[in-house]
Image (cartoon, rainbow over all chains, first blue to last red; front, side, top):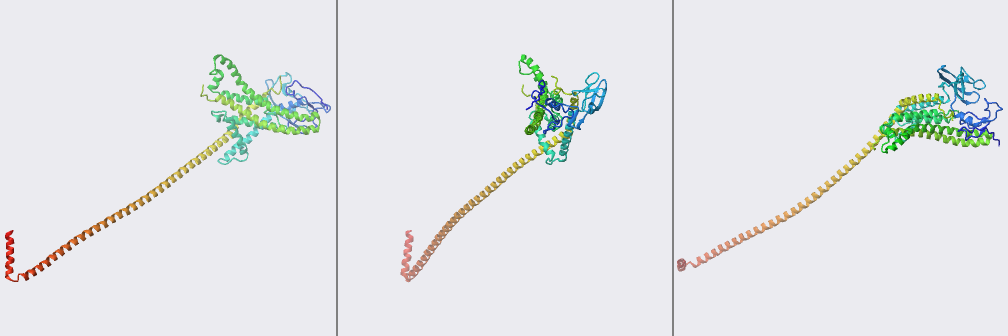
Length: 350
Length: 166
């Protein structure tokens, strides 16, 4: 069995992927081999780095590569720099007809970062990247689904729920009764809109991310970071006296211990959103990496039998990923509710 | 390690923040508000219906208990009336018997008294008759005996002697 190795041991995400394929297709959950991949690689270049491909596919991008040939969406670039001001143009300009990266209008694309060509200075990149486009799609779906459900409640007042409404209702009731109510004892209604939006944003994002060709939205650290920061802000802005006194001057603890606890507690404020950020990002990205790795096996071994075998495994991993999509949305919402609950809890004792 | 995977992109942060805030606002207004208020409404109405059913059940039970009580009371009342009536009847008949006995006794008594009186009257009558007969007999005898003067004188003398003696 041939094992053409091109090692990339240093990268943490490729450490467990010492496997390489000749060909590999773009779409994430693409299970069947597509041998005619080499559009932007010369046919002679047979060895292909699966690690690089996988990382490339879980990362954000300025183009949306759906399939080879004409299946690439060139997304709009929006950049701002103090030197050149605001510029909006298509990312198509960064690619020539051979799909090699070229400079355009004084900008250049380097490892997906847009720099000023002369000074190599990074610009403020507000481009509609693949994940921003995914974000728009996710938001659009959320708005369509939930405004329809909201209208259904107005239309079906006093009647039994039906259709989409009865599909969504148990999930909303679950979030409200099993996630929010048990954790936020005081004025949980105030936080419900945020928590419900959070839950469904993550759930829909996770599920969309599993679609073939979709971007890895909720597995992107920027997305999870923003969500965690919102949770952080809501938690601390709603923190009551008891919450802050527990952090700053823990009651019922001897004085020297309080001095020890103080930095730990302050650190704790920040570790909470960090854990939220990392957990969701890692869970979703790792799932995608596992799927892509299994898909890569076919191309590494160049064997239909392996392709058949891994396809079966991939189906099951995909099912697990569906489960993970729900679990991670639940966990993120649960922890957010828990943190808010801890900050707003009414302390009768002490 | 400066992994692109672990470096949050500025653009995505900005877009995510904007879109998410807009989503919370929009869904809060057009989805969560009507949904949650309808759910609350429905839950309250279900709870109310359940409470009312429970109340109705309790009311029914108390009504039934009341009915049974009334029925029991009525039955008791009927029994009491019957018992009273029976008692009254028996008392009445006893009284009647006693009275009958008493009046019979009285009648008997009176009859006896009347008989006694009649008997006495009859006896007196008989005695008077006997006396009258005796007198008549005596008169006749005397008339026969005193047909001569001698005997008259003798009788007068005897009377006079009797008178003297007195």
